[in-house]
Amino acid sequence: MLEFTKMQGAGNDFILFDGAKTPLPEHSALARAVCNRRFGVGADGILIADRSDRADLTMRYYNSDGSRAALCGNGLRCFARYARERGLVTTDHFIVDTAVGPRQVWIEREDGGEIGLITVEVDRPELVPYEVPVLVAGHRAVDYPLCLAGEQLTATSLRVGVPHTVLFVDQPPKEERLRALGEAIGHHPAFPQGCNLDLVLPQGDCLKIFTWERGAGHTLACGTGCCAAAEAGWLTGRVEASRVRLETEGGVLWVSRKGEMLLLTGPAETVCSGVFAAKWRAEQNG
Image (cartoon, rainbow, N blue to C red; front, side, top):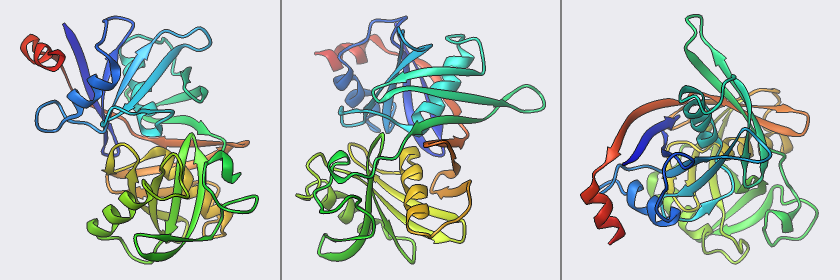
């Protein structure tokens, strides 16, 4: 049997598998099949739990198009709840190995003992252009001119586990504009590995964010994108609060610092659990 659990964090949804318990099909093909919103369960990506030699668990993440991603902030929170509720770990503070290194997670408890908000280490922001990577001159890609989909824009690019470009806007973008800019950045010569795109509307020390993810398209929330937006807000003086409130299309998240490490706090909820039919599995493998 191929058991799965579907979870969501601020509307960013994932299918989770226990890779240590059950042999899985090839991961990229599995992601494409189960994330299909017509013929599968439907999700932005899959998360696979496995054993680790240097942490309590390993998390592997694949986008809905089958591409491997180094990190996913909302996914890591969902993974933390999944691991704790299924007894894969025995404490509310543990370490998860990812493609960018081990990350700590902290689970808060509500008065009745139920799992509440979850905080995860995301990454130390990388600002050096060739590390993002983005092909621009200078030591940092902050508030630089960028022509994208025929528009002359001011952008900030950085890596927070994965590459992000932040565009500050003065009104919420229409779907057509978000799609056009998101698709354009994926083929822009300044981004040799593609890039996630975040359109951010500042409202005091709160940021409203709209994200187009490399490998998944328009998502209701992106944890690494929220971290990138907060860091870009601090770098450009658009926000001053040490704990930034991010209003995504799927819910509210918070970004703060612990030394150089960016922390992401928010909810993670289970949607459903089930078993894939043998016939469906055979069709996908056929």
